[in-house]
Image (cartoon, protein in one colour):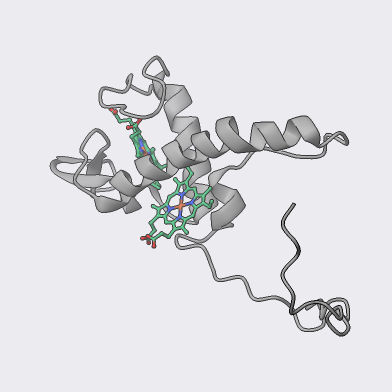
Length: 141
Ligand code: HEC
Ligand code: HEC
């Protein structure tokens, strides 16, 4: 079995995570964005892996995508604790699930623009003519 060294440079994830727990989270992030580890992690030219390619220096912070991912993680946590949890309290059918990286990214590094499918556009109610007194401001009470 491979061993996963304990993390040394966590700034947003809980600092007591084991190496294996960090690895599991990283695999989820990679899959949610459809990327590999080297999108966020810098190669270490001094250490070569069995495949002859440089190993990644996971503690290194020089890749902008790693820094963005920290912001994204903090944002996602805050969405869940400050907002989604409150919506779930009101949502009695209990069907909701928390926001994850995949909620927005859906397998893409950059979330895709959402285009409303043809025919799905709700043209809305006919609002009809404005009420006769629409030009008069409501009397103040
Ligand atoms: C979308 C960007 C992103 C991807 C993809 C990613 N990581 Fe990370 N990784 C991070 C961030 C951000 C941190 C630091 C988290 C923190 O500061 O709490 C981190 C931390 C780590 C650490 C801990 C380093 C230390 O010593 O502190 C390891 C190990 C790691 N990643 C492994 C991986 C592996 C293996 C993969 C591929 C399966 C991967 N990462 C994919 C963003 C990413
Ligand atoms: C609420 C929606 C949302 C969630 C949740 C979310 N992201 Fe993002 N993410 C975005 C948007 C929008 C952008 C584009 C921002 C920009 O212009 O750089 C982005 C950009 C990124 C980028 C930079 C991509 C690039 O090519 O510049 C990374 C890396 C990233 N997100 C990682 C993550 C990770 C990791 C998570 C989960 C911890 C996450 N995101 C959760 C919406 C989200």
